[in-house]
Image (cartoon, rainbow, N blue to C red):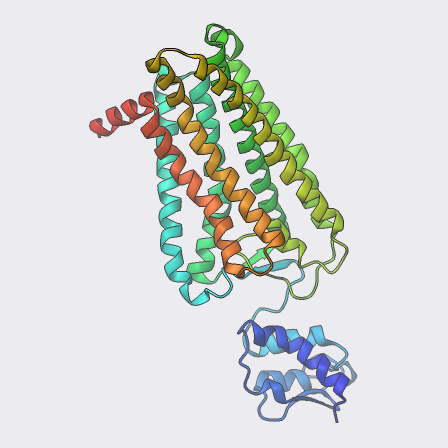
Length: 391
């Protein structure tokens, strides 16, 4: 007979599969352990019977090597093999999509796909127009191209894999692939934040010191500032996946998310994650906090200068040059800050709320940014109209 401790060990092995809907709940609550290992009081599939009761000389496994209740991981793999499932792989994580909304994945994929395609078309159009038009080879538009590249990179980091989860249930991702995704997402996010700060400085010089604008901000100078931002972002973020790499992960490697979100991966660890949590919070404060302060300082000085302008026409022109940049700043910063804070402190909220917020942060701003700049910046609007008429 099976002792209560043995039965508990079996259910710990089988329970995760039943809970995720991988195995049916029917016969498994009646699992018992006999003298040879696992036995089912109702029905055991033939493949599982052969594995649990191997015949010496046919399986290559000696009789004393049969499964025992003290080996829950092997029990779990055997059950998965019996139902033609992939055995648990310690080098693989499972992305669960949006928990609680699994039945709606196919419908959720429609706006996700549309957001991604519109984002690609809009951003590639901006890159094409700025690249083709010599009159747009200016610091402001060079910064815009940098922002466009980060938008394309961030949405591409998550959208293809998310759509594969929604459409094909392709939920597996290697540990290396997961850490790589985290690295690029955070680097691109930090780079985007740095570009927004440079754009705020660009607007400050253009409005507050217009006579020296050409000498202060050249294309070469913008390129150097962008390179500094990229190097700083890489150095700041590189520690994040390295800290994750050292962590031991539990047997249940299911990430309740559409992509490898850092805190979701941290929560899977069985070890001490204090350093990881603190460092991710530091990065959040450094990237968003310090950059928002610098952007706020720049716009505070801009507002002071604008209020001193007597001409209403000049005042309106100065405000219009800053409007698209302000819109672009507010969208990603507020969405990312809100999603990050709700993920850490909003324990009472449904999990799918956090996941939808983080996905919207990565998909909606890249889709809207080229539209905002195309509408608000006359030069881009005119050039896009010119190429559209040619087509």
